Length: 123
Image 1 (cartoon, rainbow, N blue to C red):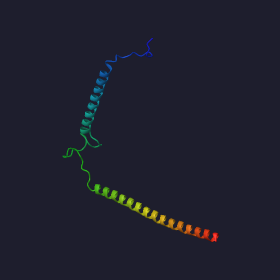
Image 2 (cartoon, rainbow, N blue to C red):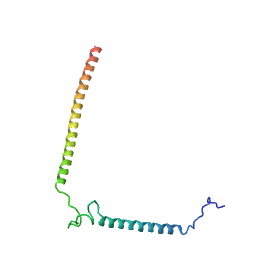
Image 3 (cartoon, one colour):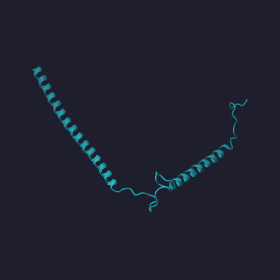
Image 4 (cartoon, helix red, strand yellow):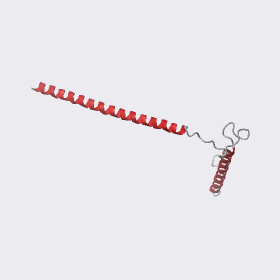
């Protein structure tokens, strides 16, 4: 019976070299897969209606120009949202300061009333 629980022990001198070789193989396989994906993405149609059976490719290398009219509208909408969010924060901050001021004044009045009451009780 083997002391390692039934498993065979590997020679310790070869292990790092074998690991290195396997790592190199995996790296080469991953690189090959990435190249294949890149090649497929360049040649394969991305949407229905394109490719050999679809319409002819555009002269710009197959890339379709984005409509320029939508970009400024999206930017404008984002800017409006940011502006509205900023205005909301400013309004909330002003309300908090106003409430803080009112509460401070109320606390001061109550403290003054308490002091008068204590003075009247002591005399």
